[in-house]
Length: 449
Image (cartoon, rainbow, N blue to C red; front, side):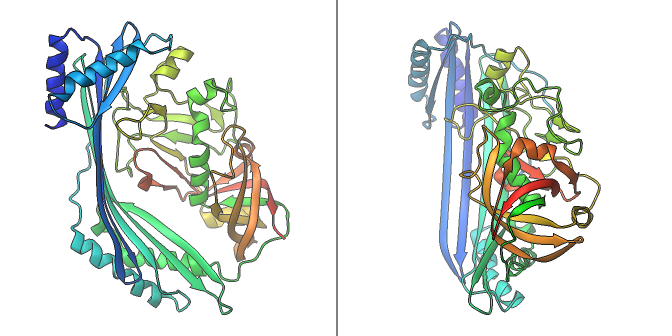
């Protein structure tokens, strides 16, 4: 029994038993993963998680139950568990069923996944490509390809039926290189495409090799305050770490410092942040959120001014506003949280080279270690072990390692003086992802030698 059949059977059971307010949420995620170490395939695996959760609304209380059994026999038990859970709810909020809205039509991307033999052949080519690219590259390159698909659907007693799906292939490669003294350096590249056959493996491995060997000869810089350039990947990482501060529920719970800040400047005029569920590069465009609310593109920060927070229905009720359609579930039985879709900083007009020229003497950050352990989304404080390059007069002088950058995210937003045009989005993160161009921060503390 597929979800459409299960949904129809559930509707019939609800009618026969006088159950008037309920909603089903379905999610099916599958992945085929292949990895190689050197010239050998060391892993092949396939996984699928498929299930449905049921929300029943009884006298303004909501009860939730879930199952992976798509059978008619399961339906009575599922409703019974959800209704029982509603009776134990201690929340005084009057929960109501969402009956639907206007949904933007989108084309769901459907791709045929590459077969296993083709994927293995491509992975087995990675080792030789890397070794030929530079003599300092060591044997034992690690690479992988994952084919990922996801489908979501919502059905409820108000006659609402929504579904959406997407798929992608993700390629990753990790390279190790050594200098003349035998010191090791490593870096990696990750890229997502609609189909692994679209990937230029040789180019991607070459990029990973280039990033790795560029670190050879790295050393700390003297401790002090520097202008800091976050390259596009690391500014993206910053947004990933601190995106939760724009959640209305986090603000309401005192876990974000943005309470009362809507309509006020919280960043420099160079900063505009957008949340776009229909982003053209996304493999999982979303016309509805995890509660069935229509999604829309929204500007969260515009030229430094906080325009709005992100809401699900519960947070919206508390603030007396409409949901922004940002309810999110990581799986069919996960609780509803608030998350952006494609959350990115709008690119500027200057190139990264022009950004470096503007910076003068600066530290460019290209890698941060232990980002979540060294950052506090509540206060905005961060202290992160990093590496990158020393920039002088618009040119990269040498590689930098064993440094720690420290500051505060909220203050950093105000200190961004320039934004480049090299926007990069981590589309491989799936439905909820972040992106940013390279940015110049006027002043950050750098601990080195």
